[in-house]
View 1 (cartoon, rainbow, N blue to C red):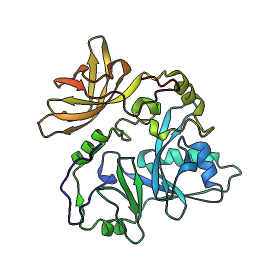
View 2 (view 1 turned 45 degrees about the vertical axis):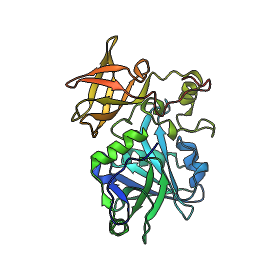
View 3 (view 1 turned 90 degrees about the vertical axis):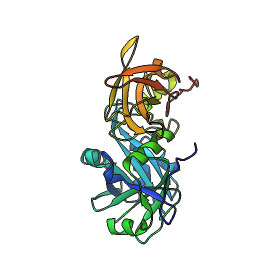
Length: 302
């Protein structure tokens, strides 16, 4: 997709600090030891073995029933080390879970609070003490992190975008967000987070239920892009004539015409472009896409 156009600073770059986003604050979990890659491969839903230095990739920590405990961003640093960026609100639970699974593994965990995370688009940045990783999550662009002062220095001259501009960018790219679309207790495919799941890397925690979904195509709720003529201030419960609880719109951003685009998790029966739903306190809500980040299953079900 064509990135949204935006004003940019002298360097031609635009950024947003993750801590400024709703539930966007991150904790850096540093991992060290000879078994880090193998250990994470057996815990996380993503194919950690495929992580390339200089890139970040989305992952999930799941229950044995395949439902989300939290998401995590795998940080494949330039020096070959692997670390995790965890949502602050689930970091304690995630770290405790990881620690319980370190038995005979040569893996050490170190929680770091004094780290700033930012998303940059239009180009990478560089600076002493700063890592800049190419990523598609939490949105397309570059994930920058390091000591707060170092990140600030690296972003000097770039333009800090308002939250609404970041949301517009996410909506256009069809990328769900933690605390908005992605929530604990959901299956990754039903919230547009299937990019965090590898179906052919082998066993990981929660793999069997997701493999059954992949084989049978049983997920009933999916992520879609929606539009309405006014911009709601928060989440909107959605209804269809034959389904009073058709879904929930979770992210909104105003558009140039005065309406608003958004992301919603809806029942698959409503996930067809042109479907019109009703929303509590707003006018008609039109579905503008098919399922985003969906798992079509081994049979390629549409």
